[in-house]
Image (cartoon, rainbow, N blue to C red; front, side):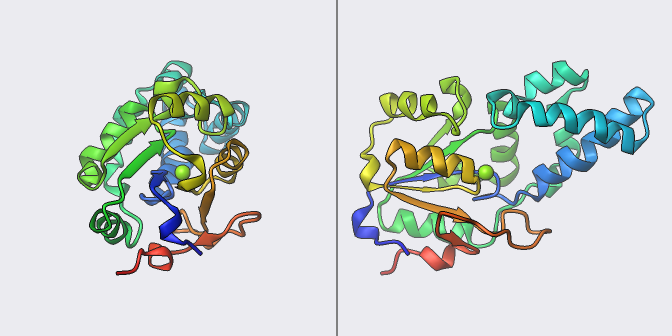
Length: 218
Ligand SMILES: [Mg+2]
């Protein structure tokens, strides 16, 4: 699937790629609706209706990933609520083995996430993921989400890389499509971003279940 000789830059998504998406799905689909319902005297069902309609309006926009936006919008401290369930923040299987193998091959490991810096900090603090990375970028630094061509232009202006020799691993097909349009040469999807859900069919990109499938060989 991957010819490592053709690659000199590896860009890695965080949620659903290096970390289990179960935390995020649990937070936004269950824990937050419960808290929002209590705060506003709504049933869980009514709370979900209100929230999910607002989520849909922000899908694929930078606001969707912005904890400050949601804190203001919903009148709740989103980072503090995330801390309540931080024990669900976990590595996906073989993330550490994969990042260690890249280091052994002297391939820099660059995180490129849509996570807001405050959510990113919580995850780095809880997992120690930063110790396995060489560079860390949040799309909020660039004022556009990875789904947008603006992100890729602004990111490349700051972090020089050869798109043709770059591998992006990301669980979002919308992000992979934007990266493909920009000219990123090697794209891999994640078939099972949430450990509590089954595999999802991925169209248009090679998909892995486990980093073992693309581990650089000796
Ligand atoms: Mg992701």
